[in-house]
Length: 490
Image (cartoon, rainbow, N blue to C red):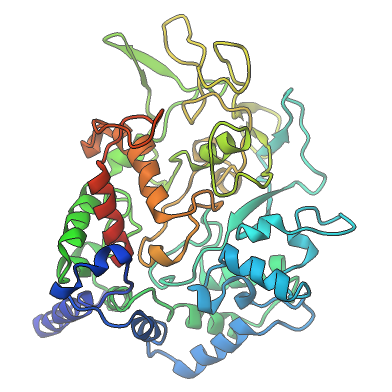
């Protein structure tokens, strides 16, 4: 591994100071405090970020053309049909609606991503939410089952889920790819997208490499580019300075940065903002399951405590985002995607690919106090422990199994990769299925339903609920506003 000389290290550190001072975005909240930290025009900075990187410029430019153009013998879609360059390489719901009104023949609107591909007149309400259909093969040790436990896997042994379009910005810093980590390299990801979403041909290795070269030169900010340079030179992630710690921040941004360190850094750590650095926090989300799919609890001083089953080599986490979509689907919550129908799956996991010995069914059949499946009050067992599955609430079905459909591991049920947070202010809506519409709502979700339950963070839910009938919160209204302000800068 390349070792830095002191003078090179000093130059890199000075670069952190310089690049850290360049804001990648602005916000109305921060505008009133800009006198202490003048902002440069966001458009100029984003152009700098998108043009960053000098390796193989000719091949990267060819990669950009390949990214933008449809491939021969395809359905007319290009990479840029969904990863829109003018939209931070995402697919914004509002632009989908505008594109459909302007040109229903736009290649984006292919039947494969219609709400019902077989309908005489296809509709695209899911696409209007920024969602595309993703078809995934079932692992050999999994089946789809119905609510009575009968195997109903399709003859093709595939499932379809609806997912948002992740940005390709900062992919030089992140791997594996996709929300479930199913692609190890950008080249593999590009070919899979061409095959699945464009119905295109097998590309030449040279073409895939050039697309990947282009994608590796797309960054959310100059600071992200700076981090990538240190990674490229071989500096260990733990030794790379976090640019925002050297940046001239506004008072609100500085308060938000300190909150980020407390509330977010455990899972969004290092200068790449996507590394789980607190394994105790990670392991809290892996509980031992009984054969019926419910969590095993032990009673400690009269309190039911889940028996944890740490997964030290697993970088995916189930924080309950699929559960949130499930609750919205059954009318027990609200979500940005709640007015479109999501899949309703149950799964059986087997000991191996022979599918002879069943291990567990997920989610388990709900056992509730009223006997109604959508009652959120779980039945208690003889010891007083709740009878609940991995999400710790009664749940009738799953809208997306997450990493489990890649790994075949029940522990990965509804778990997803930890995404990088740089540029997050420009990539709404959020989570794997676009279930949360704004950055403010993301922080609300964490404050109300997640942070207070992660004991190592020491952020108990002690603040009064901001909304009627809401639970106490881990962050105050002012703290949430400061955190959002910093995330917009990040």
